Length: 116
Image 1 (tube, helix red, strand yellow):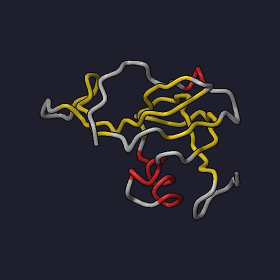
Image 2 (cartoon, rainbow, N blue to C red):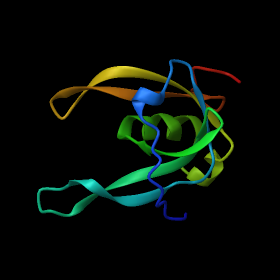
Image 3 (cartoon, rainbow, N blue to C red):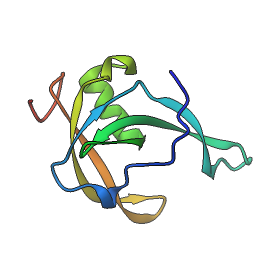
Image 4 (cartoon, helix red, strand yellow):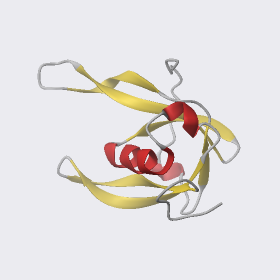
């Protein structure tokens, strides 16, 4: 696992319903510059490098997307490299606020909605 330092994040406003991403690396846990725990310790985000619309970018995975990917592709993220997922966006309650969020549907693998 290598640390990711790029600031080019895939955001929900850049996603069109049905877009497909390809996982390019195994990801890394990175200290969040934005969110901290109550004691001031930075929260750790899981960041993956993905290909979206022929561009490489970083993608922060929320807990739900992590669970979906683990169920489909297994818990060893190195095996996710080259795998794909279809993206949709949905309005979801996050910390008491409705936010537009990226939802992943893995393509192929176990327990997936979409096939390649």
